[in-house]
Length: 216
Length: 117
Figure 1 (cartoon, rainbow over the protein chains, first blue to last red):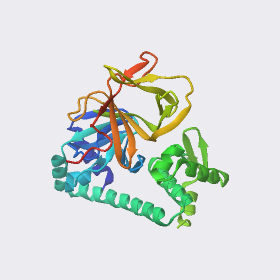
Figure 2: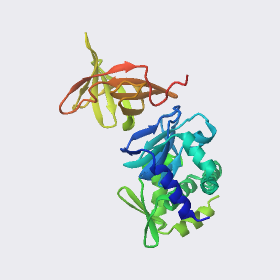
Figure 3: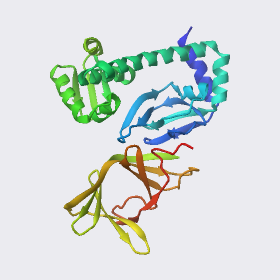
Figure 4: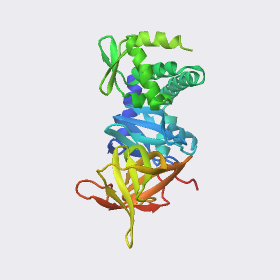
């Protein structure tokens, strides 16, 4: 299966539907609302989150181009429990769920590609779950840095640059910001990361992955 | 269209003079009841000493526009208990340099944790 052909096929399908701009903070889907559309991200980033009983955001997933969501609702019609909010200026095509499902059913290569992405996501979730259940705060911070680095890191030399604050990392890892700050301080001392204003630089993802594997 | 404008921590205190003071992060507002008008938020730039604390927790400030279920204005929502948010409408937004006092209207509308029907 040629991934580029599949990506092109998906892009062509969504290009027939309206294109919308979303500003940072704009909510595309509200919690408890069943979405009217499937969103195909052309540019930008959308976060999917829940709000804990203490009022904290718990980020569960982040979508970037060329993701489309929420496929769980489109396929299973399970009621939506989460907020979907633009993290940065975002452009997306919006298509009716029924038409997206019909498109997927008619194109096995697209379905296979979607299934691959679901499994990749599931692997990430299982890893996160393992670290949450058995890992230390250090392990959780390291794991989130690794996921963010692999998904959103901008390559610079041997490392990757992340537009990420300690507060963002705390929300993703389900930890207090102060705890994350303390752990980042230790990682800086170990030469694993550097912090520059609202960005973090991971000096080597391979080295980070090696450290993460020893944390469980 | 719903947009999350701000989020953070709030504190509500009462001073010795029985004035309620609302802190949204570092922004300070006096919360007063004006006869025939209702609740008002007034920008404050002087330090206040708490006689006692009334509430504290997270807050979220939204802008609603052309949403069927929500009034088209700013909604300030304060966490007042476990998964319990109290909403307030801010027809003129929060006080700022151009408008030092604004109305604050309690509402049952809740964006953060909508009631499941």
